[in-house]
Length: 414
Ligand code: CAO
Image 1 (tube, helix red, strand yellow):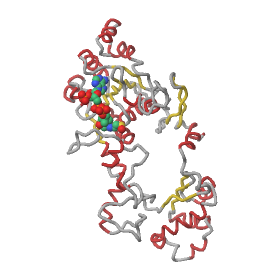
Image 2 (cartoon, helix red, strand yellow):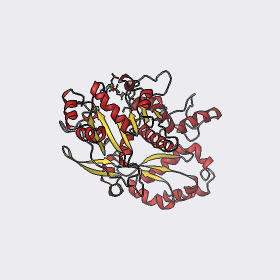
Image 3 (cartoon, protein in one colour):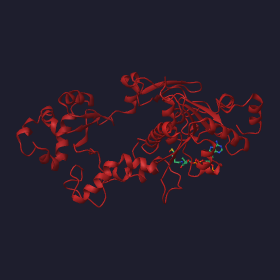
Image 4 (cartoon, rainbow, N blue to C red):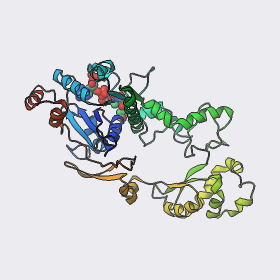
């Protein structure tokens, strides 16, 4: 049995943050009913299209295992259908611009009147405060949440990361909020409001940087590349490739770096494994040298240390480096390209990278459920076509007969 079997989600989400959440819940077995504007649908169906008139990979990769109903929630009959759906669902999830659902006539108060057990879950760009009314996309959240100011190199501009920490990151928070509220409802019998702000989600992932902001008062941040030569200002600087933890780390070149932009590896020089690392790179003499043989002695010389490591890593491929450093417990990570990840057999075997068949697109790759449950494995099913399940949902969830379905279509409500 699927873990969330029997849970029905009214999915008013679009773009990325909300769909990430509801896709996850669908993988866990919830019945996710995606509501889309008739004739238009989720804007991402048409964004970054690689094949004319076919749902984009952007859409297909964020909306697996869902059913799609088209519904104009601003139309009178559409509102009636929407009200019926609210009565029949356990959760409504949305990530419209602030106030959009209220403008449709469905405030939290009204939704509670319709169904006191429903959980109303939202993603917004910002929480209450000066920016609460803003429309927000991924990179706005990365900038406002502290990620951009702390990412990149000291001599460069603030930098956003390719990982969608604002959108997909906040979607994960929302999913946790929904499951928590469902658990709470078991005891209270009531639904509740779940709100996740993207700025908060990014800041939560930048927790270590707020830690460093406070450490800055006590002096320079010795694990940052600015130490010991560079200047520290009033705010946490960009950390380059320094490790966020207490163990110094850096990205170093490997064989082939001149032509392959991903011939690099991340090496962490944790104290416990330093002897193994020194021996592996041919610097055994460091172990008896007080200039090198303690973490404190090495700290002001991290640049030189990683230069020496790089002199060694440049002579072999990133995978050869891994083969030599892993047995001596030196944590290291090859810089894997998306091509390498797509082709990695182990990721296919675990279902983390999945090939899906789509009636219009054909076969494509997607990322499967990153959360593995032993009793409820996820099966990745293709995303729905726009309105593919409209009739079926009107019939089996809303309770309409064929005449009512025809009439809803005629007046343009679905
Ligand atoms: N029937 C009728 N109307 C519908 C509808 C439906 N089924 N679905 C949506 N609409 C309407 C909305 O009610 C809204 O109308 P109003 O402007 O009259 O309230 C309108 O469509 C547009 O919705 P929107 O403002 O949310 O969409 P947008 O493209 O202008 O903005 C976004 C997109 C993402 C910036 C905004 O939704 C937002 O800030 N969301 C919250 C933060 C978020 O999740 N951002 C992440 C996006 S992923 O990068």
